[in-house]
Amino acid sequence: MVMTYWQPNYARRAGRMKASEIRELLKLLDRPGIISFAGGIPDPKLFPEAEAAQAYVEALSGSNGATSALQYSVSEGYAPLRRWIANHMATRGVHAEADNIVITSGSQQALDFLGKLLLTPGDTALLTTPTYLGALQAFSAYEPNYDTISSGPTNRSAVTYAEAAAHAATGARVAFAYVVPDFANPTGETLSEDERSGLLDLAYDLDVPLLEDSAYSALRFEGNDQPTLQALDCRRSGSLDQSRVIYLGTFSKTVAPGLRIGWICASRAIVNHLVLLKQASDLNASGVNQIVMHRLVDGGRYEARVATARGHYRQKRDAMLRALSTYMPSAVSWTVPQGGFFVWLKVPEAVSSAELLKRAIDEANVAFVPGQAFHHDGAGSNTLRLSYSLPAESDIDIGIKRLAGLLSA
Ligand SMILES: Cc1ncc(COP(=O)(O)O)c(C=O)c1O
Image (cartoon, rainbow, N blue to C red; front, side):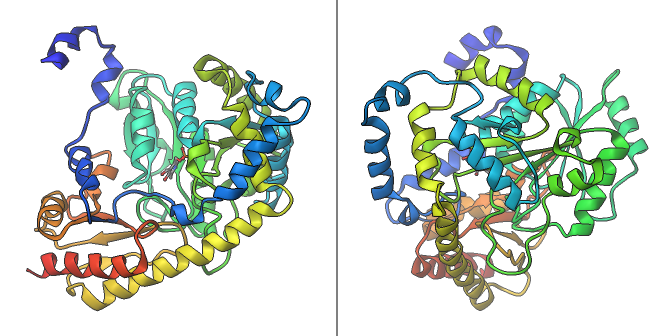
């Protein structure tokens, strides 16, 4: 009733913001005893509780402490943290200055800002299918059409992408391509260097920005680090200021999501625009949280946290892969991630993973996210995402055994 009453007042873009059936199901996750493979949620066991408490005390004490920590601050972000991130980007192969960095309230806000900056209604955003659900939610508010890029050689030519965009709506253009190149949400897959170069080629041919979402890239368990798309493009274009890659970073998966600190690293021209968006949106990311985050990562602390997190999540990944191979029927296949939080399952075509979720919650007290949620085109009904980041290893074994039991039946 309330919805109907207000409907005429909503802007057109609100029509794209719908509660999904899956979200409704995921509300059931509060049930006692449920084993949840649903959220991409960091394990609170890794949260730096004592250090954060100490860092807040320090940030708020001293002659100038509370006065600046609790005050409004500059929209681009806390200077020492921006300098730390610029130095950190060098470890990712990118020579950045603090001026190339803007601090955001998590990388989710960065996705919203980039949608706001780059999408005119009717434009085409290129995405892998499946892709991060939160990116679809952020971009959809700016009313794009979506088209699919692949990481492999199956991409269409730049001309056909441009033609498809022009057909979708009068005057429409391709606005950008968005990818999660390392341990992707939702598939756990990582792009090879060749695949990265191929994506850059396409972005050049289309003359569009390439959005590189690196949320999980620090959490590699094995294998060689791949170069960032931004590093590859700095080599190709000559410098970060000439690069078409916009890099989204976050401390959510390595330190703690509750402080809501992420960043964008990009050419100064883009950063200057983003600072205006930040100002208009929320003036600045929490000052005290930026100071605390800087204390939590500075002086080698970030690297130590990442090393611990890698070992921790690796064990959970191993527990999930072990359980999958032990219990799953042969018709089910899955990805083997080299890092991050996710395994992606394919079940037989005849199985609807949304239906399976209902049964999993009701009959087995287990939850996951049906794969369709990550598809802009409604495909993927026989896929699902399992996250191993939160449950204990023993629960991973029990939960996968129960899920396999449902699938075998
Ligand atoms: C691929 C990806 N990007 C961005 C985010 C947003 O993270 P945050 O806003 O906490 O930085 C997430 C969170 O799950 C994610 O999986």
